[in-house]
Image 1 (cartoon, rainbow, N blue to C red):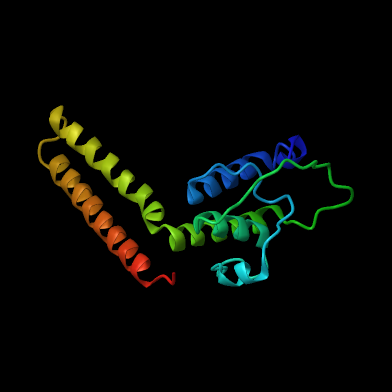
Image 2: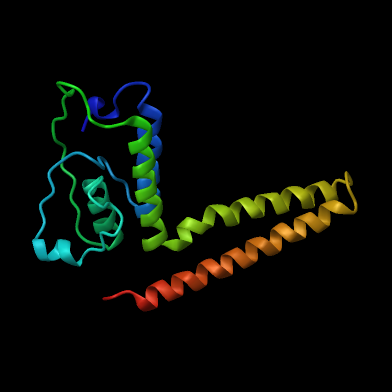
Amino acid sequence: TGSAFWGSAIKLPARMIFHQLAEFVTGQKIPDLNSGMRIFRRDDLKSVELKFSQGFSFTTTLTVAYISENRTVRFSPIPYHHRIGRSKVHMIRDTLRAAQILIQAVSFYNPLKAILPFVLLQGVFAFFFFLIWFLGASSRVAPFVASIFLVGACITSAIAMAIDVFRTATRKK
């Protein structure tokens, strides 16, 4: 880990978003998602659900899967130096692939976290339209629109909870 990990000013925003998304997925602070040595038993690896990486970003997938399945993961600082030579990483394509892996992981391991932002967004819209109605800016449309967003948030929440119950009931122990 270190300052070299974050890369250039162009890569910095993407890496920060990627890092925050990984921490949101796992619910745990992750000091370094990509670098470092992974030591694990082969049998443990076979039992981890690695459905997402398909060879790409194996270390990210492995780290997220282990943390999400409450397995022991220990982070130890390692020296990280600037690369010598050219990187084979394609900024846009590989960033999108890595984001896809994290979105698939959150949908698989914790679907409530995948749907929660949409529920919150619907709730904010409902509050906004109720506020417009309360302040008297619009007396006919605002409460109707607010109610639609509020009902949508409730339905989305119910679907998310049903998915989570189904996921929990059908997962192998």
